[in-house]
Length: 290
Image 1: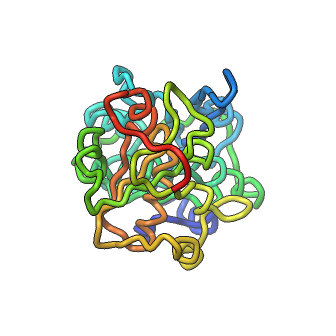
Image 2: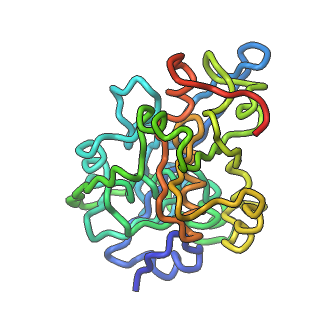
Image 3: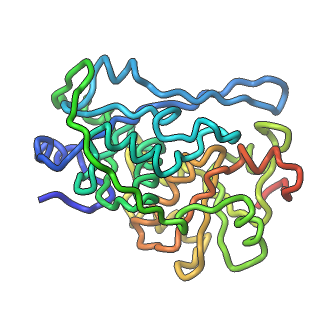
């Protein structure tokens, strides 16, 4: 029987790999940065199709997070694809309305949670993240195959849950309310000591919770009890709405994923994140420590 747990182990996946309703989606990728002047960096987004071709979990189908599930005409980089485009991408990869998806990236991290969030945002709850990702699968000596995989297309019906993401205008209206805004970026970006784009700093009132707080040493995710320990000083209120953001709406999904595992329900991702907020001079910014 397939699970609806958001996180699954390599052991579980190995046992269910040949289940007819299961589809492994390999969404390995990277974000690399380079300094372009003191205190300013530039990011490059990449998928990892060559790694997939060289070796992947048997039956897995590749998803390029920079192309396949984004909206190419959006001026903000890496924005989630509109329903029709997203549905086409999933259907072509053998994901139908009854398919259980297991999202796999390198270590069980932000690209897998990005797909987890995207599927749930379009009404598909049957999705899990592989804890430890492809790295753990390989380290344990589990089977790997190379080359492309052909799958029968399926029909994926998107059912948008608009409460799972917010626009810049919606987030601006939330400032100063009971909403809890969480920033998943590193400390330098949060304080404004370093920046991408024309402005550094953070959205006013945001709480700094870098994505690294939610990962286990060596890859994969911390168990919920340890996450609660790390969040003890923040005192997040599960009865109040939470919005997470980062630079491009990817690391932000790590926070949403772990808080979902803790039972938080009113969770949204600001998909535009700093890629949109920073360059827009009409939107307010704070600098310095929280």
